[in-house]
Structures are given as structure tokens and as C-alpha cells.
Image 1: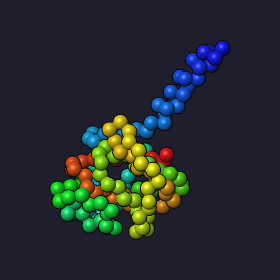
Image 2: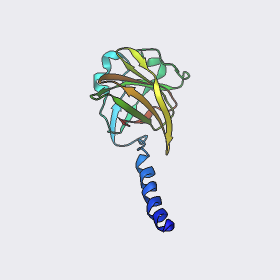
Image 3: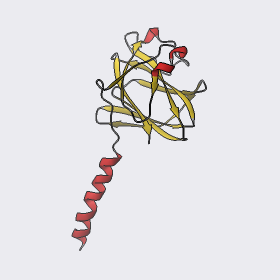
Image 4: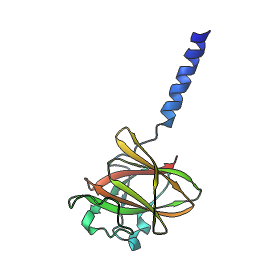
Length: 153
């Protein structure tokens, strides 16, 4: 009897693990978006929740971040800013195809991350967000393009 229960339970457990693994965005392909280099340029750099995009970044020295990033990277790195609207309070995960530094701002104030994780070929950072507009600052990326996916955890 125990072996039957185990045989039925293990596949269900594995399905739950497989479902818990979030999607990682591709570094290229799909919808393309150009990151903003300054706050007045944020509107065209708008992300939609649960929609992966390939973001073109700018040389880090060309970006005038809304708030100085915690980590800039070196002179050869890339960065930029994006904006996302959140309608419901909750934990949101930002998945990146590379190891760029992520800062999330609301009303000009940085929001501390609540968790860090890695998927198959991507970096994931979670933030507790309130309703409203949030600025996502990416800095220190080694490549000019990066895959980005923002979704509710």
C-alpha cells in the first residue's frame, strides 16, 4: 500500500516543482524594447506584466538614472531604465537573461529586494510592490541586449 501511495504522490510532487520553476526570458528574439536613458524618456520603455521582451541597453555612462544605482558596473557595461505599472500589491519577480544589477524605484525611492533566485540561464529578483508606476533600473550588464520578464510571483 505504501508503494502505491508513494508512486502516486511522487509524480504529483514533481509536477508541482516543475510548475514552480518560472520562465526565463530569452536574450534575443520576440518583442524588442529600447531602454530609456533618462526619466523623460520612460514612457516608450514600458513593460507589460508576464510579457518577455528583449531590451536594448545603452553604454552605462550615457544613462542618467533617476536614482544612482547601487552598482554601476565598469565603463564598458550597459544599462538603462524601464517602467512597469502594478495594479495589485504583491510580490513580483524580475527575471533577466544576464546578471545585470536591478534597482526598482517607486516615487523616486528604492525598494529593497525580498528574494534572489536563479533559473535555467537567468537571474531572478523579487520585490514587494504596491500599486502604481515603478521604474526598473538595469546597470552593469556586459552585453548591449538583455531579456526581461516581470510577473507576479
